[in-house]
Image (cartoon, rainbow, N blue to C red; front, side, top):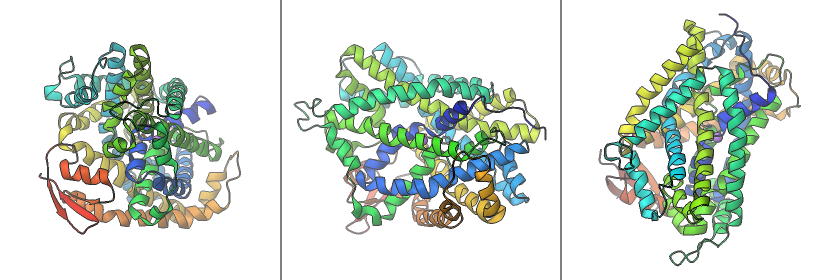
Length: 514
Ligand code: PHE
Ligand code: NA
């Protein structure tokens, strides 16, 4: 294998690219929904514990594995694992770190393309004078490609192809292209995010109307931030928190290994990994929780938010709420909100492309251009089902199996191989080599014992819900009004009804019709 000369241009570039990889649609669309569905303040403690005991350790493992593999000219998990531990099995499991990305990008880039289209429509003033119902209807007809009445026929497909083409073009410029996009996108994202979050923090009850006289943004913030200790014993909340930590930090996917393989062997990874991880946390917890939920609560009330939590809120509600600011500010708000979503999305979807490029080069000597175009073509091929069958729940299946189960599986495998096969003494040396901070020694033991046990538990405790998925059933908690409402009315993609069966007074089981 030829030693690749590619590496990050600067430390700032590396941190912004890694933060860009982590900061994504997950921070703004997934986190608020997960928090609301899991009891608001009840969610935040498990979330922080999972961050410290699983998130940070996995960041250390993946950054150091990546830099280690990079020394030998490897840029994808099969080869990186192969350099660390000899043995075919490991190499094959490493393939997860490539294909998970392809499966995720297929639906992820689709949402990313919506944000692009919504920037366009915010600028054009499409939402001007629309009622809340009309804004929601616009979204529904947008994703229903065959009946699209948004003004451009097959608009969703047009923007999807555009979005993938854009990703492909940047990837064809190699790691330097990714770095450049992060350097432009991340500061803009933070700027837009801060402005919108200030609106969220200051809206108060000034959005209340005759229809929603009690609406108050502070109710949304209090709901998210008042800790509720009783739910600490609820495994469902812990699983959701762990899942969110994995998804949001992009661990268990192979993208961090790949980015870290371009770090020079003498450069720090300890401080860098923690910085990128905290930046993601800041964007998620401080900015991500201060936009959709409080702004929606400020105009429509907290009850409405709880009953309608879903990521459609970002597209079905926000453009309508921005209209309350007058036409000019509505356009500004729309461009900022969807623009920030777009930047967060593209810096993540680019990350999902790099393991494929790295692998094709390591294994077959493909050029960056060839890798990029083949990636674009594959993503398009795998993504078309989500575009055409969006209403049929294909989307949810991708997100569940690729965006959740596979991450936990791969992360569990990784932590075991790192601390028990590669060996924790060697591992600890790798983490600390070139380090600009002293990593607390406790982490050596956390990585060796605590993280694997927790991860194993998460995996085992998720088995029942995996079975439910396979058998097209879902169990809902009666305490959660949102879930029951959802279960009694819709299938997972929001249309056809299924049958509801009572398991016990606490839980109901929902069987989907197909
Ligand atoms: N971490 C990203 C987010 O929060 C998602 C992601 C998944 C990024 C896989 C890279 C790889 O949206
Ligand atoms: Na994230």
